[in-house]
Image 1 (cartoon, rainbow, N blue to C red):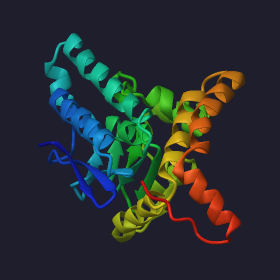
Image 2 (cartoon, rainbow, N blue to C red):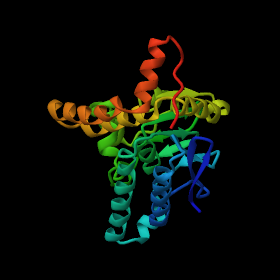
Image 3 (cartoon, helix red, strand yellow):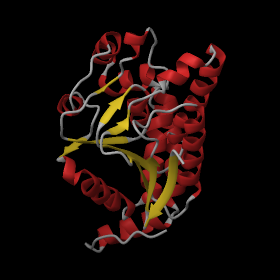
Length: 256
């Protein structure tokens, strides 16, 4: 399989494994969609990490040979499926972390952008959206997610030039949340995920949904969403435990 889902403890893993470059086409996107759905349905997975099985590529993006051989309609079917799958991540009340260990270009970076957080490895590999150099645009969410993440001006400059940047620059402009030595990336990402998994995961999931659902709406609508999501938390176990622990001056013990 080009994409698989597994779980280790409370951490779910979606693994990209399509040698040599984790390039994708329609079948890959179908498998990615099934893996995302599996992670959503797995009640024991509290955090999900998107990672690559390759040491050289997170993902080089679309399979250009397949693009060239397909009809325009076939290519659009793949893009429509990618939009559907990647947009679904924002509706899953679990934090998704992209563990970017190597080359992340085009749709490869767009998969990472669809995650909630992105942790990168230090090193000499390219990150970018080079579709303009092929006479295309970043069609798997890049034109929408990157400006929301780093601002329209910076995002436009990267997209219209197709410029490839280093992991360090990706971190400095806000594409990567964290940057770790390559040999420590997997361990540090796991450590971070385990910290979240031990926390108030229902509250964390509600925070994620509030941000994604309210971010592009008028403030009053966003506040309505916030109220809808916080109300059930007041009656939940997590709030009872968190407030009790605060009053008793002890560390909360959250469970599901």
